[in-house]
Structure formats: structure tokens, C-alpha cells
Length: 315
Image (cartoon, rainbow, N blue to C red; front, side, top):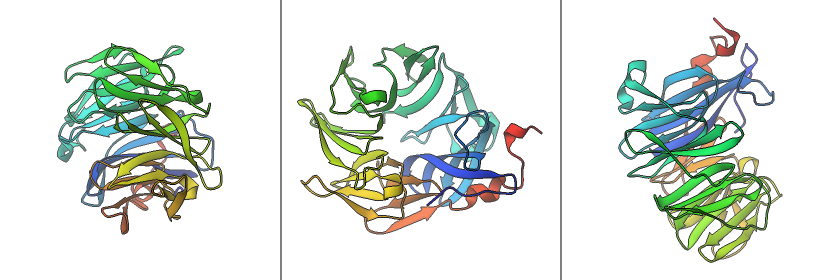
């Protein structure tokens, strides 16, 4: 589903990320920007949204770039702000009250955020010319080694993490050091999922699905028409791939074939902790069985903001 818009102010609306267990209890990141213009954080309105039993509740918005969000199993929501901040709301029932949010400065410009079920929560981004990584222990954000220009993080424990990034960056963390893993590609990694130490998956802008283990990595499959792939998740025994314009894809058993499951679902990111949640540009979709799909949020963002000028135009 394409972006929604333009409205009378010449702006468009799209969803970027989702985090949570199910469609009726998840959080969504949405952007409002000039219609069909190159991305710019200087002409951007970002919103953290709570999908509360199918009703989109817009928690807070900023002029600028909210770069990611993470919903913990306990229900806490962490939102990364490129302005050097992580916003934390512990009770989303109160999330539309700005007093319910804790503003935590971080010594970097966040570009992404992700957490383990029992912690820590990790945030990464730019500090000068470098990419840096911090971990939140519940009280403070502590610097830790960073493998390079990372854009993705996933893992099973604080000493079993994988990071992916630009120009084929892939590295694993054992609690002490990062180990780089050579790949057959120099394409940017777009998605990463560690199922076990012997099953790790990644996707690339070059349309490659990469399969890895502790023994090495190889290209397992490629996008049907060479389009970019955006994310990957193992869910209910199947391997699902977000193909953007190519649709929602699934790896066929033990083959090298990616089949199109739902061509109209331009999925770009997953959360597969309970239902298979996926972000499409104009909606958030989910399935509980891999056969029947439901969507929420179509038109919600437009209805909420289209009567108001974009924040970057001032009061």
C-alpha cells in the first residue's frame, strides 16, 4: 500500500516501524513529510503511536526525526530521537500526557533502538564521524564497543548479539569483543534475525537473503526481480521476508525460492514475537496463522494531522 497523501498542505503520511506482540497492543512510528520529496530530517514530523485494540492513539509528535522505537514485554515504550534523546513511557495508558514520559539524554545522535526481553535496551547512532553503541541497564546508558557503521541489531542474550550495517557489515558480540564476518556482498544490510547460534538471517538492499551460523554465511535466496529486501523473521516454522514493493514473501521449505504470499502487502519491517506484525507504508498488518491478514491504521494518520500545517512550517 503506497504512502497516504498528499493533503492540502502537500504532505504525505507513512508508517515506518512497529514494536509489540499483537496488532491490538503494539506501538508504531509514523512520519509526515513533503509529498514525493527526498527524505530530510529538517522537513519531517514524527509521531509515536499506540495501537490500542485497533484504535490509533497518537502519543506525541515532534518536529524532527524520531528514528526508532522498542516496546518491551513489560509494556514500556522507548523512542529514539535523533536530537540526542531517548523518550521512555512506562504506562502507555498515560502516554498522551507528556508528563508520563521520561526524557533521557544520550551522548550520541540515535539512529536505531532495540532491546532484549529482559534487557538491556540498546541505542546506536552518530557521534561526530563515528557510530557508537550504548546499553541501558535500567538506570543509565553505558557506552560499549561498536563494530562500525551499524544499522541493525538482534540477538538472544547480552553475550549473543549480531549487528549488521552498511557495505556488508556483519559482526557478532560474545560479551567481550565484536567479530567481523565476511559476506559475499557489499550491499547494505536492512534486516537481521538471530533464531539460534546455528540459524541467523539477514536481508540486503541488493535483494539478497543471507543465511548464517557459527560456521559461516552464504546467500540463500534472492528477491524475485532483484528488488531490495527489507526484513526477515522466523515465525511459526516459516521464514518470512519483507519485500517492499515485491510484497510479503516466504522462503519455500529447503529451497532457494522466495514465494509471494501477499503481493499487496508492501511490508518493510516485522515484529514476530507473538503475531506476525508488519509495517506497510499506509497501514500496519498482522496475521495469527499466516493465512488471514488484518490491517489497522489506514487513513488514521491523515485524519489526525491533515487539518494542521506541518510542524516544520512553524506556528
